[in-house]
Image (cartoon, rainbow, N blue to C red; front, top):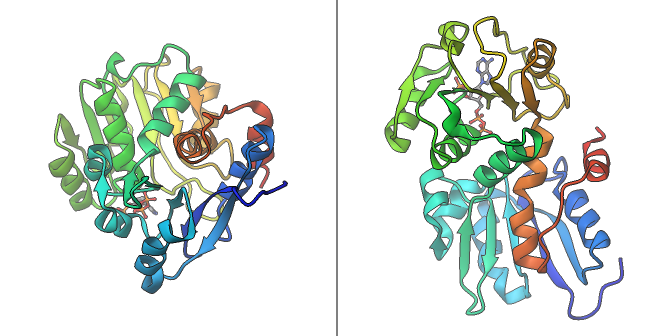
Length: 279
Ligand code: ATR
């Protein structure tokens, strides 16, 4: 990496930020496309977030990614927020506009859909009902993506039903809340199944779900990427379902930010998956 005095600057703001794969990911693309730019891990405590956000334009930053626990604060503090980010309730990508104001976007829905379109050519959420497990921040992005891609109905299940009801109220548009215990029955006739919970992640409890009623032409997605192939994805693949993993979503959601800050829309390749995916 060779930087000039004109180097474009971006980074990821989080607390903690040490686990983030974004610096490795963006660093790979900066090298690949020969960009005069840098992408840094920025460890910022919640109490200092606003100060740092306000300083970005004055430090010449083109923008930044925002991760846990700052995504909701970024939504509240950005000068301009795109409607999709407002709907999802979180900002994960900030752009410094020419006038120095901050624009907040959410690229998780884009990442989710692009990953499905690349991993399962011809995918369209309009093919049939979707089952979404989980009602956290990731679920909101996934639901917005499915709605915008024309899903006819969403069956939403969460351990804490109240949280699912709140998401259904806020995101509207054909979301049926189903009890968590009915996750086997609810799969009948579904075209898409998405796990947005942390279940199945290394170190977390397993995700127990009987796939027998899921049509074999349904597509199964997991947002967990450690391990790369979760038990859910392995079980789905063995019975003939097409699957996409969480690493793909992570890589695709990063593309619009890189394009906005550094001027090149980057590609997701097998080599990149190996480079970023190694645990
Ligand atoms: P994020 O915002 O990244 O999606 P989150 O808000 O912590 O993360 O959400 C994690 C999801 O995993 C939630 O849907 C959570 O269910 P609750 O709302 O009931 O907490 C789900 N989850 C985590 N551990 C779980 C477990 N042991 N059993 C069932 N669901 C679990």
